[in-house]
Length: 254
Image (tube, rainbow, N blue to C red; front, side, top):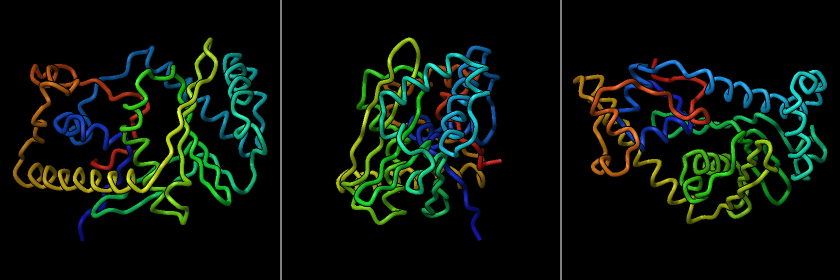
């Protein structure tokens, strides 16, 4: 029986961007430790996610807010800017840290929604980002977090495709919270399905060649122009961690 690998959006982003980098990070685990500033940002982001999760569960959050004044300011600003998030936490039609999985071939695609609202006529995914809103929304639309989160929800629910959406909230003081919303439709769903099957087919081939014949994952044909890791790969320099938000909870290849 073939092994089933669990994949998150971070795997897909890195695989599509740079297969050799994917090999080094996930198969060979050649990562350098994160710098202190990066770890601090990661810890703050984790605390903010925990705060929103505990609020949804009806658990006390006063102690968390007392320990970090910035957390309190960010939470207050977010709830003021987003009434749908502020209203009725803990109701049965909404859930924090909601996990869904979808099996495609030898892969278990896993998503974790920071918050999901399941209304009678629509489903809305919310995701918190503790950095400033990006200038290029098109890049975020093409990111595998946006694509996979909506695709898995569509495949695992009975909602019409055009009733699904995903909203990112960007929360970082001193700026007010900002949002980007992506609405779903059949065309996007079909394109994501095609791209996903192509990418997983590539991964099948790369893994087979790597495991059976010790062949390294190949570069993309145009990686000299588009891959941010190309020069570092060619120099065999230190391996940096992927972006914090792209790090999956589990490395399925160890």
